[in-house]
Image (tube, rainbow, N blue to C red; front, side):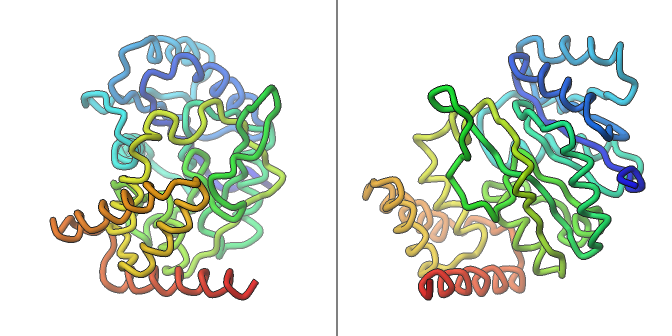
Length: 286
């Protein structure tokens, strides 16, 4: 049965009153509901908390916790820090979902994800696909390929999560976690027919600084300069912006000369570089 594994959901929130209602409604209407739904208030200044408290009157598995930190739009580390605050409030779990507050899940989302974990004990991370609205239609968000598990709708098997020492509190966390899961012997699964509607396109609040953050993330994940150059070139070509190439590499070099701490150890970094080279060579052959 799909409910043999105990699972909970953690949603970091900052000023999400506009979207949190539909998000929670669709969670409590799932064919299989979580053991706990933890809403982490990360310094909201709107009515997010009040909205969630209204749901608490109806549903007994919803919990609100506070990070007691100043609000910020900084991507990456901030959201993982909030997630980790919520994680501290889970007593026992087999699977944890990290969701964004603006996601709209299909009614069988949890059921299908949990069933996938049960079918294969080697699977360490599972998710669906993200769709955004454009010109009145919901289309696949093409910022990554369909084999990438997206940050707003990720889930983790506990043994995998603990093997890779949790999620890294840094920009690039939602890329490095996939690779580290494989480094520690786990498989990934994207369920192609689980289409999740997301109300805010990825990076809507920090598009101008995306290239800069991309360069920093590449350094912190220990890509090495050659792989970083290739990735920067690919990104700039996709966006038709030669400026992005120089911003990415400049950011990478700045982190290098500033000796910014990396988020992986030497062996993990070596695995990441080999993983990237393998993918690069595979694409060149195709």
